[in-house]
Length: 444
Ligand code: PA5
Image 1 (cartoon, rainbow, N blue to C red):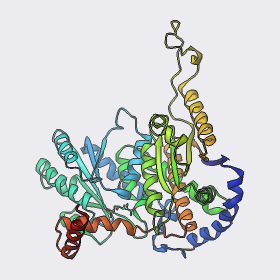
Image 2 (image 1 turned 90 degrees about the horizontal axis):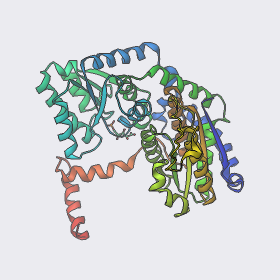
Image 3 (image 1 turned 180 degrees about the horizontal axis):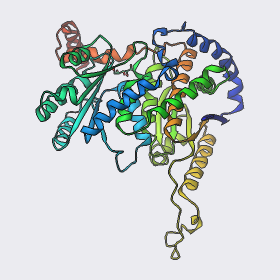
Image 4 (image 1 turned 90 degrees about the vertical axis):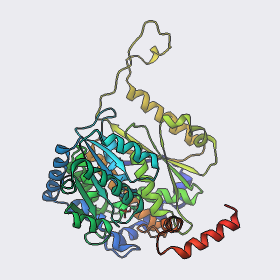
């Protein structure tokens, strides 16, 4: 089993309050997900996807990735939200911190900061490079603008044929501007299934192609997800339901913020992906647990004070990797001992890190922060595949427990409407007038 849950640091009083009730209710929610009768039931394609992914499809992704790796030193992955975070989470969880695995993957279209594209364009002028452009709707402003800028730059550097040789688009089968552009320019494309939403799309080409380009084993990633898929849907007493029930129990006890904590230097972007998954799925209708994440022990020196001693509306979910792929460095003996660290000589950095984790969990728990411990077998790509699937299944069940539709995101439209109005996009004239009035009233 790749993931187990330890709830020793969630008090019995809390567990007794709602946990068993949520677990019992959860069986019905799991059934409504499995037989597709729940809210948002047109976005449940992710449930069976790992087991339905065949070898031929993965071979095709690997073939395209190898072509890009062969003709590029750098591949730019353009996308935002669910069209970028899953790939980055897996790549960063596996990549060496100081060198690339044969091909550098960089990102664009995930924000609008103007200086970023200036730096990226200058960097790419000295490289052989390619683009993977990802957008399910094919119309999202940030990636669409980045793609316009970068593909014109690419064509200037490598000629018009680069649109066929050096660009892959991942988008809807028929809808959206990216699909039209891809067809018009003869670009290689992969399709994002209709019934898989952005933040649930890491096991589609959205995640798989960039991960393969970065040089990592997508077959192992899918194998981990398949194992977790089988584990979760074969019995109602499973880890995803357990985690979903615990989260909602803690919420009912006033713990409205969940802090996902890791003690692993490659976990940061899994935390970023997790925040989007839970934030966009649960935060609606005035409900939801606010998802935050910390990298420890680093953030003990920035957020540690608040977690220990601030507003008591937090709970922590700690992710522990039982085994790492890398052998920890040993701490040497030093006869001078001027730094007074000889008491640790002979031990290794894994020993110190584990003790820091246990010390922190106990301290935070004594300070009134319940701790859920997720134990992962190791930090390899197969386990990461299992972990991402586990989080997606938990999120779906937990959202249904909260009585929201976990698969839509109506709230993200509001900023877009305002932005289009301010950018004077045709069709948004009435909204611009409204904004002008509001600005006058607020003196903003
Ligand atoms: O989870 C989601 O649906 C969103 O975060 C989208 O992935 C994000 O808004 C990007 O959308 P698109 O892929 O249509 O460009």
